[in-house]
Length: 421
Image 1 (cartoon, rainbow, N blue to C red):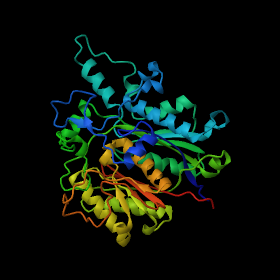
Image 2: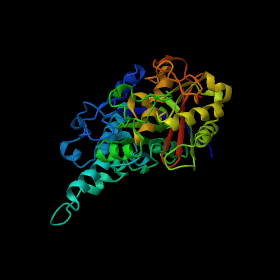
Image 3: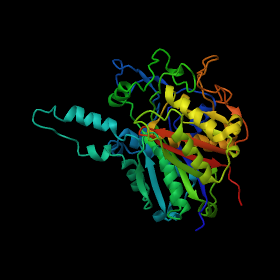
Image 4: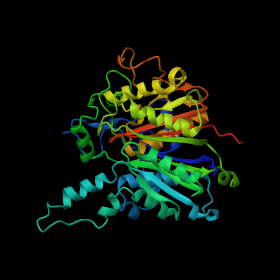
């Protein structure tokens, strides 16, 4: 069976550095940090007082007020990114076979704020017994964003959620890619969302010592690959890519951002939260993505790395890149857009895939911000080009995007310039 080609024909994004793909991309290229003191709840008694929140978004510009109340914040963000992506794609919904359009959306945690509100307020604290909102479960469950999007548009194709911690939305992209190239759908809205900036989310990650506590300087706290990094910065947001079978896209005259050509998946099988110290799982997932894409290491020009600004994770990923790419590693541009967006957890893969697609389209690599001269970790090879502090213009023929999640889940996707053949 000959596999079909898959292209990207629409983008949507709501992130800490922009409420549209255009705004997000421009701020990434210009090295703008999304970190600031937390406003979504009172974090004054927590170890970490800051995060990367979505800012200035009017949900009701996209969602009816009554319907929005039935959605957790993560679903609202997912829904908005999907609407943006569909609009961007130029699809004529009246002329589209909706039985052949699917929605696969990843999330790492799901409706944690809804859970916090319901259990904390209603639960056993009621003297006459627990009372729960009838929308508690439908707002909380991890699959509901995909469900809400498909209901809104009337899409009857494959519809489900992927949950693999911080790899969730990259797994959504991989699944969508495979469904499309096998001919099981014509178009799939693939992406992810997360909104865990709440007492449970911040408190839980604080208890694990996973978050930065650089409370006096939030904007410079996310510093991947720097010696002084002290943990990741919690982010929230959503990203959606319209993935489409090439002939279907051509038939409707769609604009094409890039072609998706490969995906890889692996497990560290090492620890519930820490990555393998030598980057074993990261090495495997990049090798598998390259093999799937039919590309050689020297064909990749840019890697949007997982790069969370954690002590162990950054080192292991840098080691894995050297193992996979060999001499070609020193010709790559590497950057972590988490230095600007923070870590979007289940949404990270989709937003970073979007950044990779736009790097391919525009021949610009966004920077890894907040690196200071001399702030070097002896375990990291700084002959690698981490694109510190300033975007770099260069030809980007193909870009790779890595995401790794608690539980040892690793996922990788590759995009390249579209060329008619």
